Length: 193
Image (cartoon, rainbow, N blue to C red; front, side, top):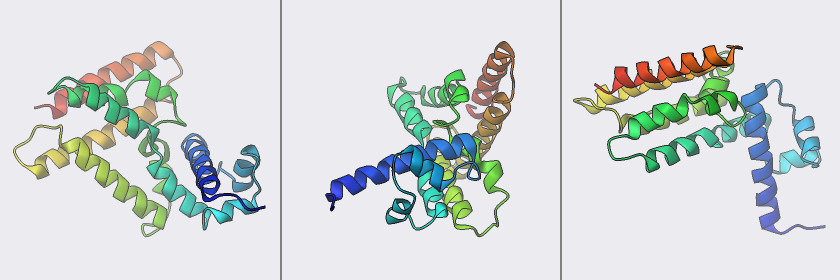
């Protein structure tokens, strides 16, 4: 039975969304193709009609960044001049901290990707996406030159993703919230000058 092209595209999107959430919450080793496809009520063999390999899926899953969309919305809704604060507040929010599957792939996957060979396609794609996102963040950071703004943005992004990773380990909710509150203030004060 033949399906229309739209059906194939919708199925591909379903696989990608589910895989992206699983990869961020379980890592690539905890994301088996057979289990993913079974949970979506699709065949294991059907995976390869959409993706050449698990690595191809991983690379495309980086683009499925729900947090990036939340950050864009927060920036768009911020008052003029308040974009940087909105970005930091949203990234280091308790909601983001609690939503590993829908959260930032940098916080969820960077330690895993660091173990891959430097020239692996997934690692290179991740680095490219990180560079693109950091350049966008730099547009909201004050600085005398583009290079200065981008350097601050790199430190901000790496610091916030590390902070988020550590916050996810803290079991006491009040301590976790205080940690995130302090981090938001620290990062805003550090890069807004």
